[in-house]
Image 1 (cartoon, rainbow, N blue to C red):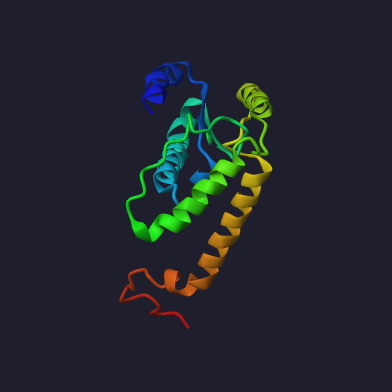
Image 2 (cartoon, rainbow, N blue to C red):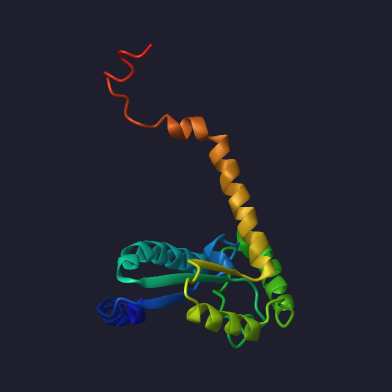
Length: 175
């Protein structure tokens, strides 16, 4: 945020620019035992969504990139830091998740070199996307999230639509 805030005055003055923020699949859907990571990515998503609406009038474009699992060092012991297990009720599930993450290291489907090439092309494009869902695994995740949201809307549509104030004169004169 600080870097973006630092460059925005220049971008506004020149009436152009492009801010690319790296989110995650976890910015679309939270995962067990990654709640703080997901919270930070959800925050980035909301910030960029609002910022896009503020900056468009200045010719400044924004893109949020949601990468899936890319074969980086994210899951290595040198890179990944996990909180100590503090609640016994979570111990078994946490251990299973940690084992799964360790098993994924070096097996991630995404190629970081290809993502870098795609980001450079995106940065030079005339009409960059507001969002890049990057990787087949996160495409699947995004589609699942869309389906889940639609099911939630459909399940409680009538309740949600009934929550407006009822004007005393509403409906009078209608037949």
